[in-house]
Image (tube, rainbow, N blue to C red):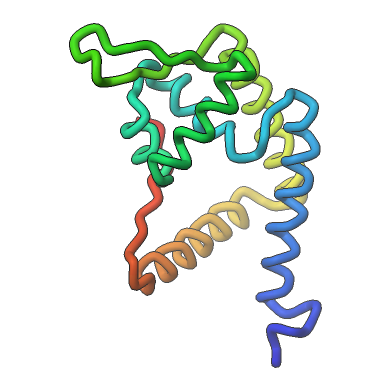
Length: 155
């Protein structure tokens, strides 16, 4: 099978994912953050005071997963939950000053990893790579029986 060959497209793609994850985890460990937490911090940095349901939808995760993530980063002092002033049933999440600092450090880490990963690529090659990856993503999303939609947006 071609996918079993160490240099097959499938194998190389998996290697890139593993190396990217390992480097990201190693660098995020220095600021006390797990790899899955920066997207939540970024979402709150861009739009503070979201409720847990909004955060889960924005990140494309289950509400229960968002609750666990929030519990962990709340213990770290990066976010805090407060009752909504208009609806006591709703809890809103706010990023703390410490969370904002860590968020900036995470953005710097992501930038460093991105620069390292694409250091010998031309702008044209990066545009082509992005287009190809988006096409791969769309192929997988469109073939998924459960039709799971992940949202990666800044709005």
